Length: 108
Image (cartoon, rainbow, N blue to C red; front, side):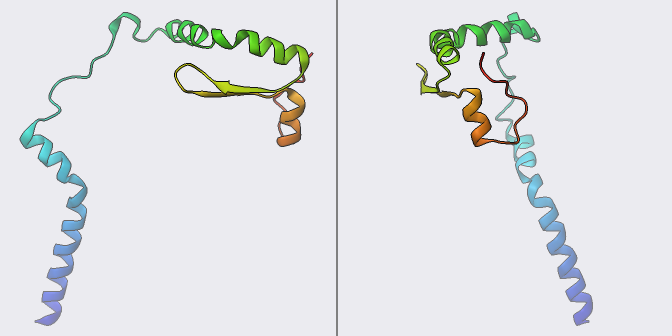
């Protein structure tokens, strides 16, 4: 009788552990808190050029700094207006820090 009870307890425990990750899904089925769709701007949905143009505009403020770094072969770092930190390393610095990097070409 003890072994049958142990097997039943083990099966119950394992079943509960397997059902535990599904609890949020069952709660959502009953309460429907995420019933509204996400807001997506359909004007540029799926157009990769929109991302490219937006990114180009976003980093446009770095153009003078990048040109100066390429011309002088120096490094630069700073923070953009939205708080994102940027670094620009010249090719020699990258090869010193990451000797196995073949992708970086030296500055002309």
